[in-house]
Length: 167
View (cartoon, rainbow, N blue to C red):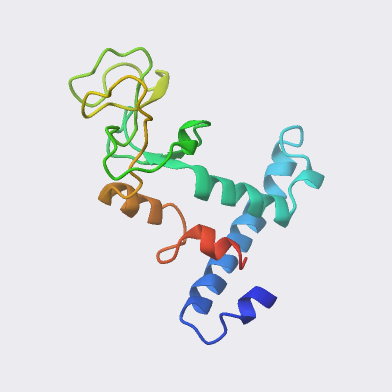
């Protein structure tokens, strides 16, 4: 592509090319297999490469990588409308979100009690008191959050947002 040509003599071109190939392989493995298995949910005409890339980019750029639930060390990416719009602040009073049993009153340990089918809720805990009227922000630069965001996909270097322009 024209954008990829601009990277021709940089170390980034190899990463972008590898990422694009990994995504094309994932798309080929999923479609038409999902369309054949579940045609009502995945109509063949609806899952083009372009739509797959759009959906992948949404998850990569808007998803929050969180832990918790029956397997506290397991990490999963969740889409959390509104939460993904929180502004950034390095002095945020919000802890990085986690999945907790819905309606739980401040669990004392990992939410491993209860059946594995328990409903989980994305939970933000305050680390300090927040005065009335103060905007709540999230600190995206938390060392764990940064490490986990890189682990979400084949992107081990630059941001997926940067790479997305070249795919």
